[in-house]
Image (cartoon, rainbow, N blue to C red):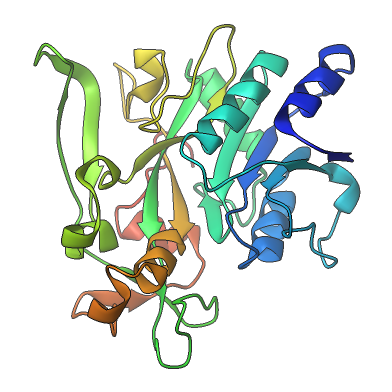
Length: 290
């Protein structure tokens, strides 16, 4: 189904229930790897996808299940567009689980090659959690001469080290319990080209919608407990969002593209599109799920 605007989507589904999730929201800033992003989410087991896209970016013809995708016209490059889209879905789908990402981003959770996202959600729910913290892991093409936009799935690389965390504090400088700010990847290595508010790599990438919940502009949620990286009694399952978005931006923005002729460094490693590799690198945590 095509909705001419986010307001039209809200109005339509105010009287037409969305059905059962889990749901995924894809914010398409351009058509780059849009098809592979949508197909990845379909294969993970999301029941319905909501594609936010500006005029000129259409639903790819080679998606595996086009009937499961709603296209919503939206100016996705405007500030706050992701928050507007996710918050609209939260209001329409209380109790359902939601994942959101951009095009050329790929959600991974432990053992996702053999297990569906519904199984991960069932486990997290049993753990009395309603959120899965994710870390955005930057991907980049090995050879920028061959792939000047830095996007190529077959030669994708990532940083194998250089990730760190610091204590998160509120406006009164009080330490927030079980919350950390995480950094690393291209945002760390090329930080001179990345504004300070955009340097964090943590994102609440999968969560259960609740009444009154809001996604904030720093990719945290309005409920502080849902921003925690673990529960009080043991380590919690976490995920990763493997993303070409930063590499693509660094290669396209006028202020950085002439300063970046390669993303490779001595800690670059080939990405094998494997949840096991991400766990072995410490980029996501299975918790008590085996």
